[in-house]
Image (cartoon, rainbow, N blue to C red; front, side, top):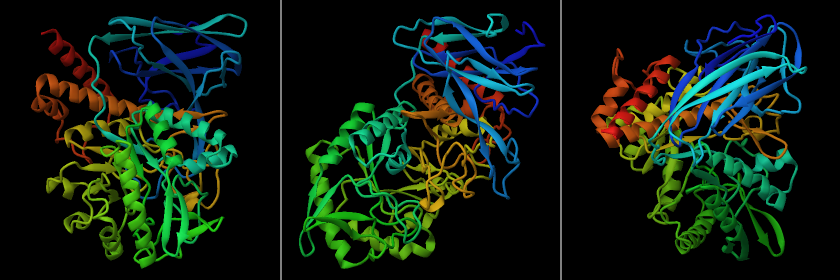
Length: 552
């Protein structure tokens, strides 16, 4: 409700809206919704003033536990590649809504003349929440105390809870980026504190598996270049081709993960990216001096590195068993191998396969041939290359997407509608996908890790990837700053859990039928409803079916 349209216009819209400062607001009002007892629910209030107005106060009245954040704008010079599809919001460079900053009550809200902006409100029910209708009233007041506008949202809490998340979910966690950005020594006490805060934040968004740097991960690194050393395993050269290993830092890492709710360890790749041709950077104590013993100059198929792995992996797996982690550890060989590197990948796989026979080995790839030849037991095909794996009935299938998946399939670039981000949960459910991987939780470097970047100014990894591919969080003074894309992706995981709940009450046949009901074609990874309204209404429908099923 607008109290004084000449001063301040406001409108409640859904979490799936993206509010641009230089565009008319065409989004429909969204003033009510439903959520389950343990579900996070977000909506926005868009606002525009006819003149510059600072220090606007917000007064929020509600019995629910909630947070208020302001939606910030960041630049995008590369919103999309030249061959993007038509399902995007815009393709021009400019300012895009993404970071979510804590609302500073002392400073108040700023309204810019003629620009639509928004605030983001998230309800997180606590253990004392009561089922029923809850009213959330938000009043905007000028710095002089004059009421400018008032909006009311009604959220019905349904007396049913979402089941625990089954999906394995990893967003690659770049430990070195935290040390570099905050200017701290790797694995100093301050670094551990920062890592801990980011790990806890990741876990709160359904990330239950963490990239664990046994050695500095050989990822997104220029050939011949290197990233800062983040090595959890201590190595000591005791004699020619003989090594001793220490796991104290790895133990601390695992304890930190457990404390924060991370259930699974995803050990960093044992060979370099894009083909397994070299060893990762490994630092060791050699006669009291720390220096690099393996890296780009190491032939991955050479005897020296093979001897190292045949000593290291048995000790590591014994340590895993000693600490009761057998069911929680996953290994990688090499990320995104292509067909022209099939032989080197096969050689690497052969080198470690027997040593890791009791553990799952997972790798992102796009060619079915790797699986067909038995080289990858647990493949992670991209969502635009998943069809051959589905057609051949691969069990326990994962999927991923990155910059290359920008035609027709789900993704989460700045310029994509949030509905295109959220639909992934429904697709994961329909195809019984066991895990989801993405490479960029906090990659704050340019492409190939050539230099540090400021993610508030450079959002495309130095004109490499469309904005929104390389990271989900921004660095705050003492910890992470979230994003629209992270919030909406978590909503997709909640949708997935709601479908699993529906299945437990009504059977899988009814749950899958609800996905495809009224669609012109059955939902696939490339064919799906594009409208935010479909997602919002269909989720409401699930909630009502679940509510009735629990009553009967």
